[in-house]
Length: 193
Image (cartoon, rainbow, N blue to C red; front, side):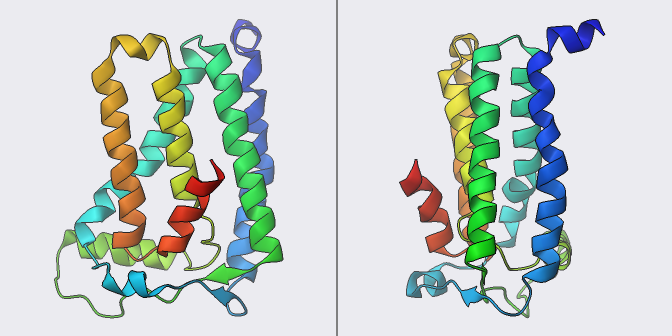
């Protein structure tokens, strides 16, 4: 009871009850009839399986950032950061509903046979190449970086702020190097901010 009183602002996690069913609905229903997102620049970007590392770290990065702001008493940042994520994801899901989209960038064969390629294959099996424009990975990474950079408490630990920018940048690049997103998907969230 005291935890709930102390962290009343955690109600925003109820958004998960909207987000998850909506996400899985889109993953199951936007599979064949969608607009293909593609630019000539996408063809020039090489596939680099090593970028599965920062791509996977996105989940940790977002969870740790949200958790930090929830438990660190920085209510103002959490109250701003969490709605930023929820509102952005809602707008993006609305776009996916109105404008079903996807890509055909993924390689069908791989030059190497290593653990990173194996992880990419698992990613491809778990995540369809649809609902990509605009990129949630990019938007949420930028949101996390903004929250960390605006944290007064974290200004005492500049290395954390700079490390978050580096990780955020690598995550954004990973979406293109793993052929998960087109350049257009990556640029769109940046322009809206």
